[in-house]
Length: 172
Image (cartoon, rainbow, N blue to C red; front, side, top):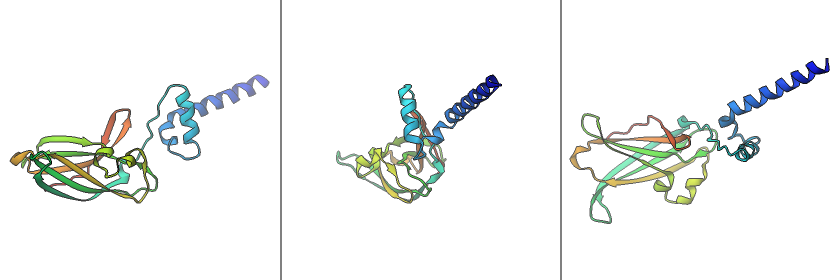
């Protein structure tokens, strides 16, 4: 009888550990369990990338201007507002700019990290509070008449060095 009780307790403990391991990316963002869980995994040499909600971000508006940059080259300057419309804080997203020709084919693309587009680069390592709107300022060398329009996407890291981007599209 004691054997079966111990075996059942061990099975429940193993099942609990498996459940925590399976849902670790979701659990890591929970205030109560996240920090201790991160420490346990860090002690094992494992980094957990949280499961952030890409749909929580929204690009509200944008303005594009073509003008010379500080080096005298033509540049395309784009200003957009990114809103965290979700219920929890998340990292500032990366922004992918894709330039398109008149047939909607890509003629160039670049991903801007938060430290590249935020006025205060020190905010890039912090979480974006729920309800906050951040201004993104992007600048690229003017591609000339080949670029007829552009598309902006917000992107977040889903695995170490792997980005997932949304479908917020913007066209001139």
